Length: 321
Image (cartoon, rainbow, N blue to C red):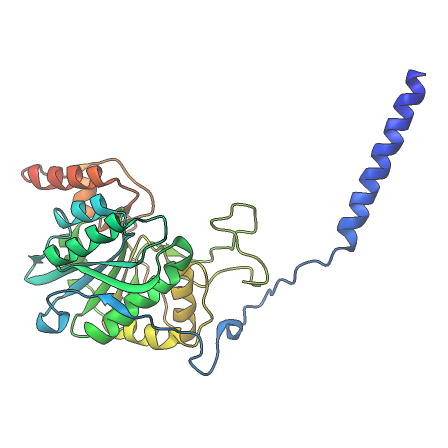
């Protein structure tokens, strides 16, 4: 009796497995374009870009000063502590090697979950510091590409007298002095685009929703070269060309890859620094010599940014070998 029951179960499982196998075999396989044809994302007319209204602007206009680098920090309305940490550390307006560095925070419109108190705090910050730039789109992770377009729009239209812009996340520590020194030492900068490079990075086809991309959205095997959104530096001349190109490039949900698509259309290469110890994708423990040398490191809390900045300036007499 038990043997007969076992045989029945085996036959049922075998039949089910065969059915599943046949179902998978008859499903159409996704079309993967092996040879990249970037015209998939390109239109001859500027049909894609939508410029939203600026509802808050900086107090001291960029045209009225002469910054060497303008750092544009992507911030959420609720990230009050992060903005305060940056203002009191690397984002304070300073002159490095005779060059001015200015920092602004880019935000969008709040969601329904963000109450009026949060909105009021942001407007109070704008009144007190004059460093908030806001546009009228919903400020969510999926709209980071809109915030990227906003950054390039603002730089192109309102800050064309700077030499460079740097896009940065709000959890990034920047050694602003090293940033300026690095840029001053470059020989060719008109089409500069640099940061933590991704070359031949492949789309994620798994189930992790945050980085998943379907074949319909992106039918190629590899992304164009781009830099991580943690912090990349662009010459203002190139930023203006990228902004103009954005109107012809189909929006893409990953903002850093989207900029890479624009660079691909413009036939501009990502500049990969010979020194691999300048941009860090993940947090590294504080080490006076490493933090003296780097330009940007990602993934720090507000308290770590403050502590690391204080330590960097406090241990000034230490000699690194």
